[in-house]
Image (cartoon, rainbow, N blue to C red):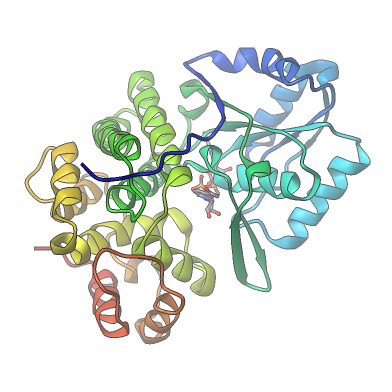
Length: 352
Ligand code: NAD
């Protein structure tokens, strides 16, 4: 039996279709009286409906969240929260909106209630990220961990199938790396394997029937597990590469995870055989890496960095950046083996 250290993160989870109706109760439960509701411009209508539902408990809607939390966007949101004397934040949306809520919490220590509408998993982590001058800085801080998370599948029924697929694969990537994490523990591994199982079962159904409420709930359940794993244990090479490609080459976050996860799984397969066996079992196939590749294909999601608009001439500098300050990884990382890995990802080769 391995030795391990287990720290549970405090969060209240309210899970089930229609449970967004309990938002006001959850606001009161935290003794909040003046919450600011956040969303992207895209989801403003939803945020406004929620603010109306909250009545006098809401002091405004700030529908300005954008991907990767640029520092100017974070500063404007902090200013808005202060000027309205908000005493709490309700962040409704994907990782970008929840990320903006975290940026406000980092500065003001205001409590956050998160209502995730994608599968990215940010709502379960104390990890914040802010982008300054094209460089994303991340850190861990207990203040940014949402106090309450409401998972309501009804809010996800209109999440486009393409984003459903890539954000679901982003969640699967947290679970995959959680299984070979340096500080994995029996609980994180149980959650990671179950998260992969739930998402791998739900995502193809969502692809075929986006309005299937049961599959949407199953995917949110997988997202909850994956976010919990991400919040609990350290990530490895896959996340390092995705941060590099997203941050320095401006490639879209969830799509990069989608392209990279089969390739990094193949890269690590011989160094983490137990994790690979659990991933394959959770996917219901014989090989973790090709099973993930086939899932990406089944979801008609992007397979190659080329398809995401990456230039082949940038692969050398991507390999340099991704191997600078490396994270722990089960297989030794060198500039050359990462360059080779990036080439396979560029071409979108099926791992053998
Ligand atoms: P996102 O939040 O950028 O959302 C993508 C798009 O989908 C947005 O336009 C949004 O308005 C729209 N959308 C979201 N939910 C919708 C719904 N139900 N119906 C219709 N449209 C909807 O994308 P994401 O993948 O959720 O988040 C990516 C960001 O989250 C990245 O910046 C990433 O770094 C961050 N992230 C952070 C953590 C963490 O722990 N800190 C974890 C995962 C991701």
